[in-house]
Length: 207
Length: 207
DNA sequence: TGCGAAATAGACAGATCGGTCTGTCCTTGT
DNA sequence: ACAAGGACAGACCGATCTGTCTATTTCGCA
Image (cartoon, rainbow over all chains, first blue to last red; front, top):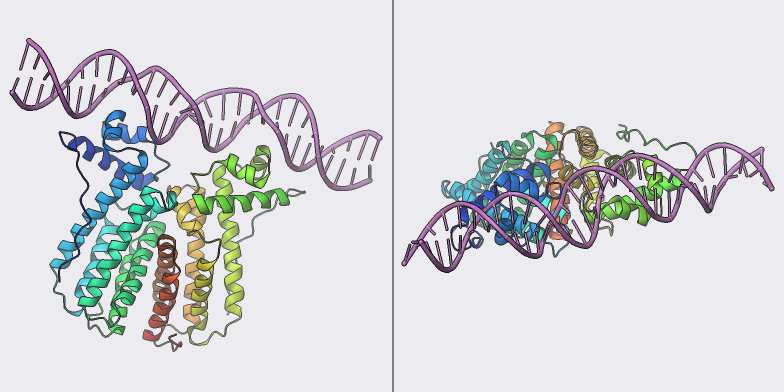
C-alpha cells in the first residue's frame, strides 16, 4: 500500500528567486504561527525576511497568497514527515495509525509549535473563497484520506468511520495543546486511539 | 451531585445601560463569530448595535475587553444550557456524558454556529496576557472540570483521564465541523464517546 | 417644565495596513 | 564592458484601525 502522495509541489518561479522566496515563507511561518495572520503586517514579514516589498509581490500576488503558499508548503512537509514515519513501521495491527499519534505528540512538543497553522488560517479567513481557508481545508482532507487508508490497511471494518474518530482526536490534540500549553493532550490522544483500535478488534498493543 | 456552577456573572453597570451593553455584545457575537475578531473593526460593531463609540468605551475599556466579556457571557450561556440538559438526564450509565455530546451535536447544527468563538479568540489573541485568550482558556477549563465530574459520577475508574479523552473529541468536533461545514463530525464524536464509555465498562447504551 | 444623566454624532489623533510605483543598484552571463 | 534580469529603498495611495474628545441631543424622573 502506497502512502498517499503529497499535494502537488508549489511552483518555484524560474531564476534565482528561490532563496528570497524561502526566506519569505520562513519569516511568515515564524511570525504568523506565534502572533496570528492578521496581527502581523507584511512590513514585519519583510523586515524579518530581509526582503523588499516588490520582491514579495513578485513571488506572491497578495498577503493571502503568501499565507496559502505557506500552508501548502507546511502541508507538504508534514505529509513527507508522516510518510517517512509510517514507512518505518510495519502495517500490521494498526501500528501505523499509532505512529501518526507518535508523530503528533512529538510535533506539539517541538519548539516551533504554537498551535495549528491550518486551524488558525481558517479561523481568520473564514470565507469559503478565502485562499488560506481553502488551503487549510485541503490539507485536513488529505489527513483524513491518509487516516482512512491506514485504517483500511489495518483491517478496520469501517475505515471511514475509524478515520473520522481518529481525526477528531488529532484536531482535539492540536487545540488543547495550544490552549493548555501542555503536551498532555497528545499522550491522552494516543492512548485513546489505542483504545479505539482495540475496541475495533485491531489488535494493536494498547500502550 | 451538583452540576458545576457557572462562572461569576458579568457585572452589569448600574443604571440604564444594560440594553446598550446587550446590543453591543449581541452585535459583537454576530460579527466576530462570522468574520473573526481582528477582521471586524469596532465601527462595524457600533453600526450593527446602533450604539455610539463613547458608549462602547463606557461599558468596555477596549476592544479586547469587549471580546473577553462576550466570551464570558457566551461561556455562561453554554454552562447554563448544559446544566439544564444534564439535569434532565439520570446520572446512571454515562448518560449525562452522552447528553453533552447530544447538546454539542445540536449546537453545531444551529444557524449561529460558525466555529468555536473560544478557539478563535485564543488563536487571534495568543499572548498569555491577552484577555480574550484568558477568557477562552478559563472556559475550556470549566468544560474539563464538568466532564471530569460527570465521569466520576458515571463511575469511571480514572475520571480525569476519561474527561481528557472526551474533551479531545469535543474540540475535534468544533474544529472539523467548522472546517468541513458539515455536522457529521458531531455524530461521529458521540459514537466514539459511547465506544469509550463501553470500553471503560460504564454500561452506557452504545447508540 | 426643568434638571441631570446618559447617549449621541462625528471630528480628531496617530498609527498601521495592503498594495503600487519609480528610480536605482546589484548580479550574472556573454 | 554591456545588457538583461532581479532586487532594492522607500515614497506614495487610499483605506482602516483603536481610542480620545467636544458639543449637542435625548431620555427619564420629579
